[in-house]
Image (cartoon, rainbow, N blue to C red; front, top):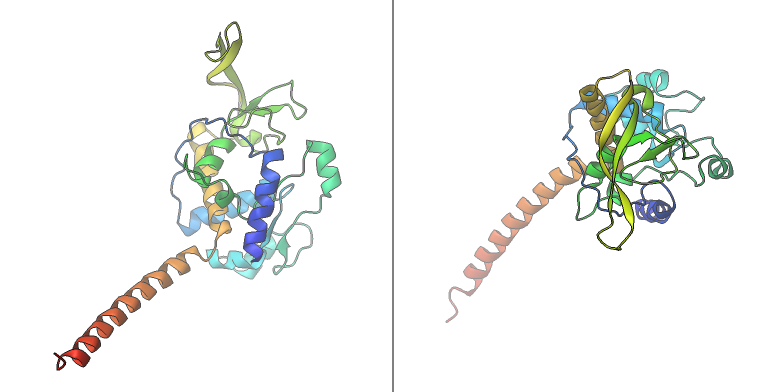
Length: 253
């Protein structure tokens, strides 16, 4: 019930903030990352770059122990403001301040990959493309824009890793309205380099998205294993019931 309420809350916030685009921008496939090392790295990136503004209030820090981290490792490396290992992943920023600074309250990211799942691609694909599609735009209040979500309210928090890029746009006739021109995106141009190469940055984003996907349902692998056991049990039970039924009715003609 709590998870369902959280999912509905995220969906309610999305139209007014970052993940509101329905423009059909083609999504890149998010690399599958299931190793403990990738998920641990993703957790570190999430705490350092996302948890400053976005909460994940359906997740507790102590669940990171499921990723092979000890309580001491979580306490010493992932807690920065006096939180306890058993605390929820919340932020100190007040909603009123967030709205004043960004124009909207940053949504909770507990189940964001599930909230963004659609027929056009998985939530992981969406986030992987979105986080790699920021560009410099001095016309925006934050100085940043995004190809996936035009006029995005969120700044590019990973810019030091990726560097500064500009969007290359060409002017074309609007096929839907005669006499109107539109700008078509044709690519990015690197203005200043970041701390990482393009491949290294993509790798880091893949780990971050993998962690957010895991965070949306930490018990997913357990559920899958239990599901397989239940299916096998039901199959065995059905076979026994069929044999019992056959034995019971064999002498009745």
